[in-house]
Structure formats: structure tokens, C-alpha cells
Image 1 (cartoon, one colour):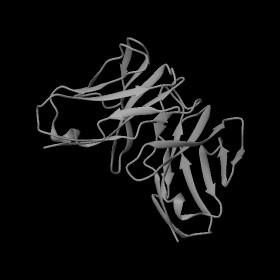
Image 2 (tube, chains in turn green, yellow):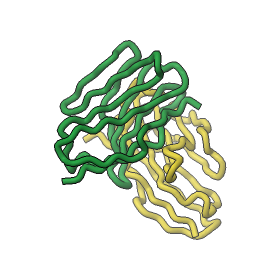
Image 3 (cartoon, chains in turn orange, cyan):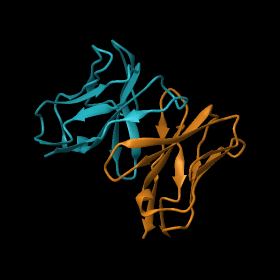
Image 4 (cartoon, each protein chain N blue to C red):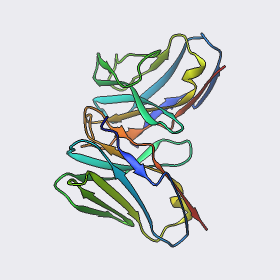
Amino acid sequence: SQQGEEDPQALSIQEGENATMNCSYKTSINNLQWYRQNSGRGLVHLILIRSNEREKHSGRLRVTLDTSKKSSSLLITASRAADTASYFCATDGNQFYFGTGTSLTVIP
Amino acid sequence: EAQVTQNPRYLITVTGKKLTVTCSQNMNHEYMSWYRQDPGLGLRQIYYSMNVEVTDKGDVPEGYKVSRKEKRNFPLILESPSPNQTSLYFCASSWSRGAGTEAFFGQGTRLTVV
């Protein structure tokens, strides 16, 4: 399966700290995306990184991609309580392949 | 506002009673898909559609049907629901399949089959 796998499964941090979550995948990709899901709600697109990019920033988000290791990381800096959500990576293929997500809790 | 609209948001039904979950998008996207989300299993694709009258099975199509008669609508049909179809369902649309374009998701339909 091309499904991405996020790590850790759950992460709890204090407000203001940085949160890092990782995604590993199995086959070569052209693009990788990160999505956020608030509890029980639809997924919202955060950022897309292409296979020829190594790093991308969007506001407090920083995404890295290492195609040699087939992995990506999402860093959220200066976390806020509103960042509490599940985060998913999605990889290429005939469809979006989602992992099981990282559940992030930011404690005020 | 660009959006994908699913209805209903919540549904409790009995085994065997046919139901339809509607999905509509206003972005003129060609690609639409349905996912189910279960604890520990992530999102799994049920069916997808590349365009009007073009549909295909995803990873978990058993027990589901879809149709794409119009570009904007992609209903999910459960002809004879069973308890193992209790799940959180999402409709999504995008310009194309694959992770090269952003996917827009509906708010989800929480289905309980008793």
C-alpha cells in the first residue's frame, strides 16, 4: 500500500511549544500533502510539497520532505490551543492515500 | 465560497433500510470521492469518480454504490446497510486525483446502523 503512516500516534504539548509529527510512506511520490482534522469534522488542506522540494513554509507551519528516506515532517511552531486536532499526510497515486493521523493536543 | 456539502450530518438507521448520503460541490471539480474513517484505520477510499458517468471502486467498495449523473453531485448509496458500515463518511472533491492538487472535504456524515 502507498499509505502514509504518521508518527507519533498521539502528542501532547504545552501552548507555545513546537510540535513535530512525521510521515513515512512506502513508494515513490510526486507530491505530499498535510491535512488537519478537527474532532469529527472534515479534513482541511494545510500544505503541499512536491518531490523536488525539500522544505516549505506556510505561516507557523514548516514541512520537510526527504525522498531518499521516504519521509516527511510537519513542524508547528509556537503552538496554540486551537492547533489541537489530528494531522494527516496524504501521498500520491491513483487516489489520495492517507495515514491514520497524529492526534495533537495543545494544553493551554 | 468553495465548499463540499454533505447531508445528512448524522444518521441512525436500521439494518437493511436503504439510505443515500448526498454530496455536492460548487467548484466544478472533475474528481470526487467517498471515504470512510474508522478508529485506527484512517481514511479509506470507498469509490471515486473521474468525471460524469465515470466511477470506480476504491479500497473498500463492498456494500456501497455511487452515481455521477451531474458534475456537482456524487451520492453514496447503501442498498442494505449493515452494522459494520457504522462509520464516519466523508465526501471530497479536487481538480484531479492524486496529491498534486488540494482536496476539499465535506463536514462528514456520522452513520450508525443498528
